[in-house]
Length: 79
Image 1 (cartoon, one colour):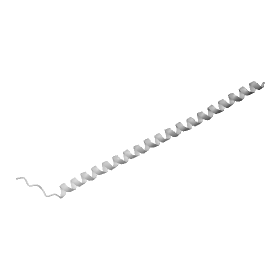
Image 2: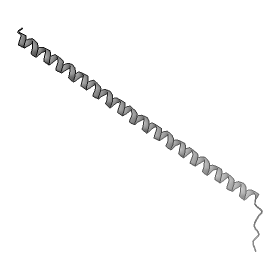
Image 3: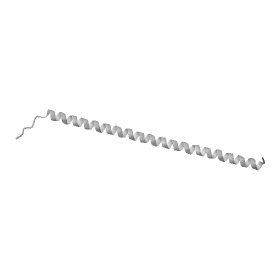
Image 4: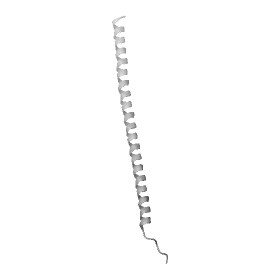
């Protein structure tokens, strides 16, 4: 193998190494982005579920209060 061939081989190996390093950095960044997006989506879903539970509980309490008020109110007289 001549000196020129050795230089070309070295350049090619360095290019392959650099490309792999770049690919790994891009892949890592992509995976981190996807993980962040999934985490944010999960948190939004949890928040929505919590809000829905609170709304249902508030409606239930309101309905119970109306029943209680209706039960405790004196009967109406029809004139």
